[in-house]
Length: 437
Image 1 (cartoon, helix red, strand yellow):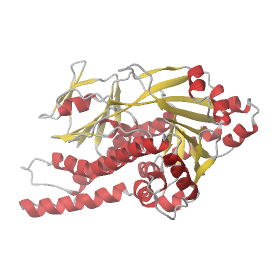
Image 2 (cartoon, helix red, strand yellow):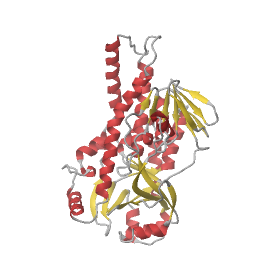
Image 3 (cartoon, one colour):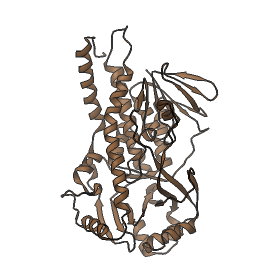
Image 4 (cartoon, helix red, strand yellow):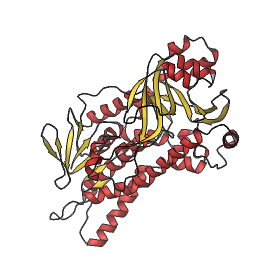
């Protein structure tokens, strides 16, 4: 079985590793001329870390990243602690740690695992057409490539999605943008600020919540670097995706915020400015033997640290299902392999879970950015009394919601679903299915 994956982002690479582990032939088509380190920090919550363990890259992530001791939610104006979310028992509770890591280190770990598993990665290979009848892609160079399965993992601005839907499907602007920047530990220590040094000494994510804005700060590279993300209302021109951020504008935007945050911002020499976009929920992710994954089909707001996590879950589930199909099921030779059915099974498993995340992120956007007033005061009071033993209406402190989001075993789930599918198909058409020996 041959799998062609369009895109070498986190989701595409995770899918490639998962497929290669199942002894599938995998080729990634990446339009960029080479793998270039991009982005800044990224969170790897326990559900994503569990997939990383399944893919064999968790030790590498632990080596390059930081396992968090907790997440601190603070009031924007004075930095008062609203909620201390300890992660000391994350392994015990959810089966994996909560990490933060530089995106480039995350991608490199997946890339090295893919190459070691025998994945072929073609750079400078831009897909401009997908033939759903022949399960074939055409590159801009005119070259064609056929496969048993084609996976569109080409992100928010996905060409694969346009081809699958049959019409242009640009993402929708959300009204928010993000500044992203990184610092060295030495830059922050040069401030000679005792309170900033205290923040830097902790293995925690610090999130300041305020009216229409919030900020997130955490360590990278074993605490030798730090990542800062500032979320605010969008002021980029319509259609603009990214610009160079202006530090003066950032300081003015957060002028009335916690002094520690303002001191940290003052260390920035440069930052990128990104428009936040999402896409309306797709009715279908699959067509024939072609499927989408990650941001190509369920891009989400970054308010639950789950965008990349959902993409790696997609990749692991799809690889596992295809492997189970290849290894365990054999139809009579005259019957075409029902790959399309497997892809519809993949969609049915992933759609409900990713929809839960997308809706949860939208809810978190609202609760993060409450204006000062009675509702904000009620939120803060609820956060200050949350102890992980009582349920609340806010997702971040809802025990049941967090257990489902962070503790769900996607591999076990897809194995059970595959067996149910196999039995139903066997019983419905009378064809013989035999286990591979």
